[in-house]
Length: 192
Length: 192
Image (cartoon, rainbow over all chains, first blue to last red):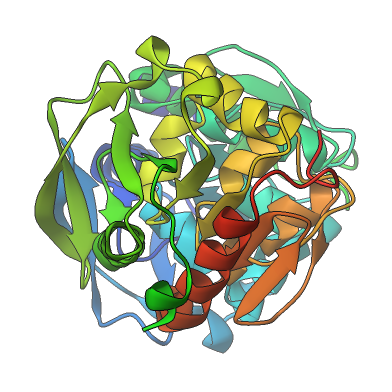
């Protein structure tokens, strides 16, 4: 297991998500972070309930407990941020200014951010994709490029604390690099 | 009824859509076009089945019959194009190069295009939004502006044969202007 290589005890990681997250893209990173002894908090919108519903195999799937509402927390409370995909999830998050400001604050602080599938959309919304090497689900490639990103078709792309992947098929590589970047901590090249 | 004001007999209109279309955003325009005596064809992807499933009230809804696959038709077969929303639907369509080329061809020919909600995303993908006044569902505002559009927060925006609206709440105004623009026919200001 990749997680055994990194001791993240004492680190607190936010997973920002709402209804419609791709189930595996939230659960697999969460499990790997907990195995590495990180504290993981699921952060969602005030309009979400205390449980958010995942998406799997083209339909609604399992629910996950929400730990805090994004308007009640700040990037200063966390060491890193994880953004799962699922087309419905970031489509809702990006309309919430607290969620978008929360994402941007991790970049301002140089903290690691890991985004997969449709998750990188939030980077376009927060205007932190400009000049960064990244990947995403293919459908949003044009949006990411129009937001100034250098879009790359690889299973995982690491750019100064920013870790991105394309789909659930890339999860093993994504989780491995996510743990490594969070272990390393602040990256001065992670910026807005 | 607005449709009574426009006689669209002899006109053929394509509705390009796949699974996850917002039910009302396909059905209401289709019904209004048929009431105005237009011929309406539902065009979808080869990967879709002969029925595509709609989305209503946050879950899968009713299905609609597909009349033709996009790779088997061309913009020359139609007088106008309608693009319903629903977040899942254009997210799938924009990854299909035949679908994107089909959309672009209506702009090249100056033919009316009506897009609602997440439908305008296809205009970003086809790179035909540049310099155009339009609206959309709020979540994709940033993507549309990054694609060069002048995004306006109004129930319906008409720009030289391009009709756009924000959500199902705007459907009455959207359908009214859609019928008017299709009735007028070719618009020289509709371009790529």
